[in-house]
Amino acid sequence: MYEAELSAGLEGVRAAARVCRAVQQRLVTAETLEKKDKSPVTVADFASQAIVCQRLEAAFPSDALVGEEGSAELRDGSQTELCDAVVREVAAEVSGAPGASAVLDWIDRGAADGSTARYWTLDPIDGTKGFLRGEQYAVALGLLEEGEVKLGLLGCPNLPDGSGGQGALFAAVRGGGARAYSLWDEGDTTGTAIRVSDITDTRAARFCESVESAHSNQEEAGEIARQLGMTQEPFRIDSQCKYASVARADASIYLRMPTRADYREKIWDHAAGMIVVEEAGGRVTDVNGNDLDFGHGRTLDENRGIVATCGPIHDRVIEVVRAVRGAAS
Ligand code: AMP
Ligand code: MG
Figure 1 (tube, helix red, strand yellow):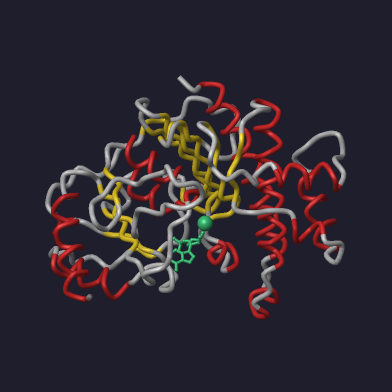
Figure 2: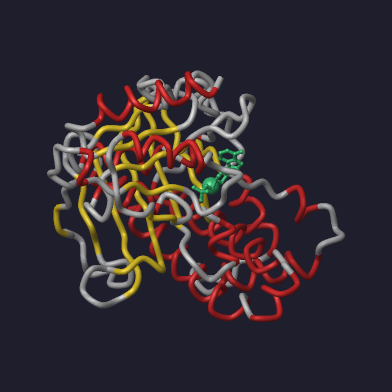
């Protein structure tokens, strides 16, 4: 099932990951870091979205896509340097020397609102802060039908591959399990199955959370960990690499504790990660223990925060999360 979708997804995410890696290696320098110059991630973000959209357009011309980026900033005429840089990066992965108008049109294929029965959702670079620090980020692509995530892919260019190399790719098809593939070897079409940790006692668990304290309440997570008897230090890592870490048993819990009452999680930050964890045998809910509800367009309107676990410990983790959050409010 979803073989053609998986194959197009693998191709698009791999091509986008190659460009992101090249841009990070070339443009994230001591100088841009020092100046807090965001232009490298802006270039890679647009190029990544254009490349994935180009691949999906070729394979599924009538499919809609909900992407994080839009091309308005590139179209207003004041950003010719940025626009030229994006076109150059895209040309490295798309044959036929595409010009600016084709590239902008691909980017804008991501402008859908999620109101159709079937659509893809893409975060072209999830974890932009990690990208700029030279650390972790992910190209995250999900496919939704009737509000259900059917397929998810996570390309993680800086994540250890488990055998000494760098770069990992994860994909999951609903009902078909989760697999890790080589990110750089296109010949790897089968991958290997991955499985969450088999721990059943939270005292043995390690949890992961955002590096950015603005994205997740780390103090609250620390208290939850304490009450669950966890002694290992939190594993702080940017992007949906957190979901990948739970899926392949580098960690057993992912806590994303809300920092603001009015923040709504974006679907492209969770669709791919959620299915990869679920298909690896784990569970994903919000902080109240509710299933993620992908039926509200671009955001998870009915959910707050995220709790992902290896499974058997989930109810216990939610119990403590609710107690700690209740005590704080
Ligand atoms: P992470 O790398 O897990 O810290 O998450 C990166 C994502 O956090 C970005 O893609 C943003 O969409 C999202 N984000 C931005 N502001 C917030 C916030 N206040 N709470 C939760 N997530 C946020
Ligand atoms: Mg993101």
